[in-house]
Amino acid sequence: MSFAVGAAAAGKPAVDQALHDRALEILQKSISFRTVDGAGQVPAYAEYLKGVLVQAGYAPGDVVVEPVANTATLVARYKGTDSKLKPIVVIGHMDVVEAKREDWKRDPFTPVLENGYVFGRGSVDNKFEVSMIVATMARLKRDGWKPKRDVILAFSGDEETQMVSTRKLAEQFKGAELALNGDAGGGLLSEEGKPVVYGLQAGEKTYADFKLTVTNPGGHSSRPGKINAINQLAAALDRIGKYQFPSKHNELTMAYFRESLPKLSGPTAEAIKRYLANPEDAQAIATLSEDPSYVGQVRTTCVATMIDGGHATNALPQKAEANINCRIFPGTSVEEVQKTLGEVAAEPAVKITQVTTGSVASDASPLRKDVMAAVTKAVHANYPGLSIVPSMSAGATDSMHFRAQGVPSYGVSGLFMKDSDEFSHGLDERVPVSSIDGALAHWNSLLKDLAR
Image (cartoon, rainbow, N blue to C red; front, side, top):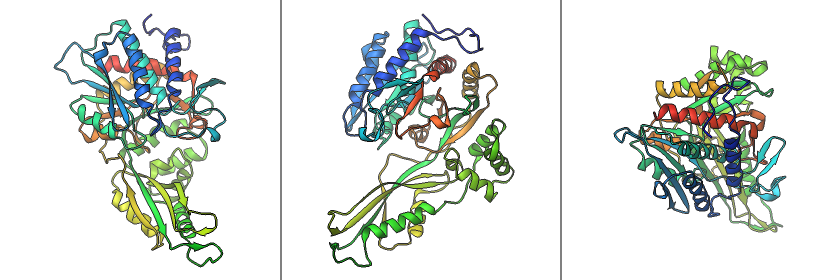
């Protein structure tokens, strides 16, 4: 059975039930692999995905799982008919952030299908899109599709941590025509389930972690003094938590706000209207900064994410440490942010050091006409007339390393979700089952248009 592209009753691509069921099966199996840093399950997950592709007709030699550091990459090549053309690379990541069973209502690594959702760590980030891509590429192989360009799946294994595997893949495929990233972009639904906007990621913030450390001689807890490492660190964290970096804007963020405005209402819409008229409007900036969906689009953000201190319940702390995670607006350097954190902390005893990460600064990708046309066609097949908005991701993705190698990269996820369903990296992460069919049709359309 091939992809059905005729119009269904609602005007959307008809549902291929067999493909839907297979994609759901792959997603559920994917969640069961505990691909967190240090667990060693990324290679096993990659081998599972390889098995799906080989079963669909890929030659075993065209699907390579390669160990990298303590993780792995998966590279699958779908050969085109014209070897002179540069390949298209489809990227995503197989790893997930940690999830503790005692914190969750359900086991995070046992997929649960409930109330129209698939629950589990990675159900959104990034195993939904990896599963949809693999299901699509498997079906295309079975159908005998003949693209002109090679299409290369290049899945990393440590996007959530050091991005060693990402850098390897970006170096390996630095001659590619472009990269399509399933871990970025995507559609926003209103709380009523109506489409609001589709964001095409063409740029992103720089990711940086900073460690704040206070050390004291310590001593017996019965002899407290004015100096206490935990108290000093807490005071510094409180000041940093209350600080807001200066607001900033660029072409991508202004385009996102401009195209989102017609579909929004209430205080948020009014704030965006004021902001578009004057990006220095303090009241508008304050309103947008209070909304988790928009704060990352108007400024650099830094937030405490981890803390550790003391060595015994009956001793004064000799050391207290915290991690500050920053998402830095393009045009602002990591060094500048580190300096600001020191000034805001206003505590000489707090030492601030940058923690090594896999992040690199990268320029925005050009808005190519062929990419914009292909994305518009794919989105409009499901949501006719919906605005396609170039956007800047507030988070970090594998795209940054491909852009740094000169490969134009675009976040083109097929997932549409309500903001209230977004639990990536959080408790009880879930993805709507209703998003599967649209995402499958989305990737089928994109690949056929861009690789032809």
